Image 1 (cartoon, rainbow, N blue to C red):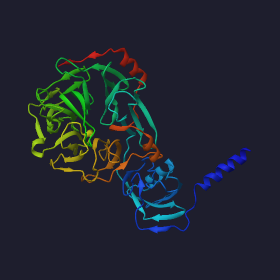
Image 2: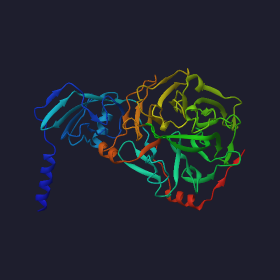
Image 3: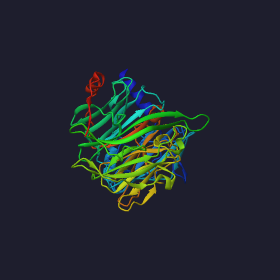
Image 4: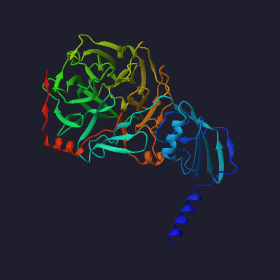
Length: 485
């Protein structure tokens, strides 16, 4: 009986994988989802599995042939490549391309589509993976919110800290030091809130709110030396639209920027970063001698939400003394452009500055017109990244450790869920077509996952984090109080 059962399974598998027979040629590229036609990928990335966009397709047959050698063949309800075989094919074809031949079975007839290519970059992506927060777009605390990490070279995802471990708590602003997770910070908001500083696996939970700062730290960014961490201190609020296509506006009633010296738990303040204006989203330069941030004039929010326009600024910082410069430089003036410039992040090689541009506001993930822009820090020339932008929201971008790849969150698929896309950038600032973060069965995975991604960041190695210790620290409610230097 056992042999008969095995035989039946084999026959069933064969029946579900019919061979291509007398296909009709179509002079068009296949409509596949995700859209991987013409993308550029790093060698060793997880397989770019895909399905036909037409769900009526009964079977898809794919041959992936490398320009420098190697070939894979898959056949089934979707293109499902073996991880090790795909890695070997991409490694073999660095600097070349993989030619994809797709045939689809529909209504008992095969169609062969025009071949398309996937470029395999010579520029490596050696980082282990990505960290990100997953959160249902339900606008409330709780549920299945969590911070996760994903191995970019497989489909493995691991929780770092989730709401099931610290029930009812909102965790956010998880930040590693230039992709090095040996320096990690995170913020727990609400009851039992606190700021985590983790160094080499040792957790320290702080109260970063003082009489001089009005709120705890959020929107963090490490100094490359690993001793300082910059934060915005602000209040976050939500307002909902009525009778429009837009759902929500997130705004801040106040916001300042501070820097924490993690060696002695002291806050460094500057009167230029604590004004009546709203200073937000700090980021240190690659050398650590400059702190970028955005600033906007106070408005009567939420009624005057459309008047919130953020300029992009920079202030000198001396790591040896912990002192700020005496004047700030405006890189992009909001009034001049009538735009809002936020979330500036420099590449780790010091060449580029990427930021998000929206018509207004300081929380672009809620702005459908938000796009990514790029500045050449050698010349300050700036441009819109048309290669990656879409008609919907682009935001939450981060750089790989070698500054040749970046990840960002986009709502291009449905306007509701932010998903992660990766793209390559060369030394001249040319950017490749972005590709959706691969999944083993992408249609099933993204169709069933009711979470948005935000705050993605690369990590060189897997994050080591003791969630049990975090639970103990969060609920014992003991926080070391930071001081003002």
